[in-house]
Amino acid sequence: MKSLTLSDIEDIRAYERHRDDYRREVIALKKVRRVAVGPILTLLFENRETIRFQIQEMARAEKLFSDEAIEVELGIYNPLIPSKNQLSATLFLELTSKDQLVEWLPKLVGIEDSLELKINGLAEGIVAFCEESHKEQLTRNEMTASVHYIRFDLNDEQAEALKANGGSIRSTHFRYDYEAELTFDTIGSLAKDWI
Image 1 (cartoon, rainbow, N blue to C red):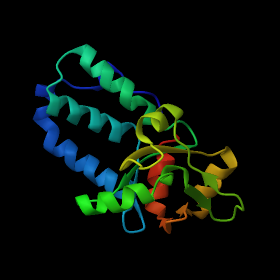
Image 2 (image 1 turned 90 degrees about the vertical axis):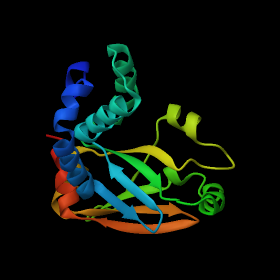
Image 3 (image 1 turned 45 degrees about the vertical axis):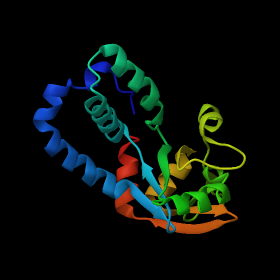
Image 4 (image 1 turned 90 degrees about the horizontal axis):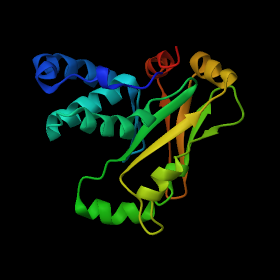
């Protein structure tokens, strides 16, 4: 998928005219791309449209009017757009109270390195990875962050097998061992990113 450019981001007045309709479309898109892995971990598989929406909403909320300010956001979010045969996801730890944060964030250090894409019919799983710059910013030895950005790199054979046979996402973290099947609706949406 190609990166977003300044011309892909509407100014706030133009965006506001159709925001409600666009928001409904992106919410529907995200619904099929959201995968719960156990009770508190959710993956949202990103693509060009989900990232465009994120930047539009950031510009709206923070009243970013200048090209320079939008360029900063493009620099931050464009790396989350997947390449061919790649899955890019935002990992959310869905912790809604201070007590949950205090309990789980220290327990789940390393969770971002514990996710594996298992493809039906293939023996080897594909382990998620984070960019080093992300790890330096968000990961500490004593506590993890509640949001991480991860990727899965597939080769052509793995991508075709995932589309044909399905698969699942598994957390192999010693304190959080859960697995979730990927629906064929989800896989179909992910595969469209590779065209």
